[in-house]
Length: 262
Picture 1 (cartoon, rainbow, N blue to C red):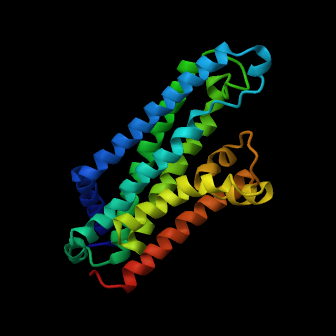
Picture 2: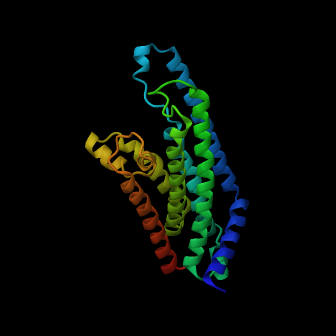
Picture 3: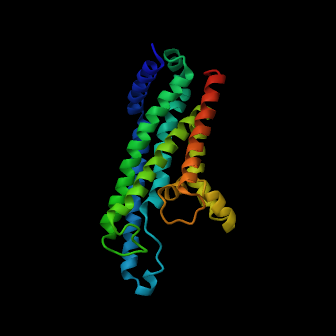
């Protein structure tokens, strides 16, 4: 069998497995919940805006729902990617998996391919839901509250938010292969997309911008080329996103190929 045939068969098996994992549906439910909570927060913000004076309205920040919801979506969808491999270490089924696909890098590539499909699909759905919530709740309210006066203005943000969920899913697979522990992998993903961005806000402005500019959730506006305070160009943001994937999957491939399955 050729490598492409082995990869295709392994990827098909991974697709079957990810549908049978209860954690997959639990994490997807988490994404739905945070998207609904984001819509609720936006609703109350709009109510507050409508009750404010014209002078106060000018001081409102942009109500981009992807800023609130997508980091949590990145965590929940990325967790599905991590579970593709950490669940096998937890259940001791990694041995049979390696017997079926002895070429360890092909096995990791199959898991990464399935994680990429999940990341793109779920990222697109949740980003579109966040955009739909904004269009429905913001209506024709002007800037600065409304980040997208025309619906076409949202296209770059929606696309780039989708790409970053895809990137996070691939990073999660690499972390899962390197760490072998569900708890460690999920803690690391949570630290990357949820905890570190919050910590960055407490740093002095110069250091805040330097750190925040290279964090996964903050790559979305930089990649989209929208208004933002960060330091990277669109090309720089793309390079940082690619570096995350290369480093994580490289570390995962190295760990999987050099360590035994136990």
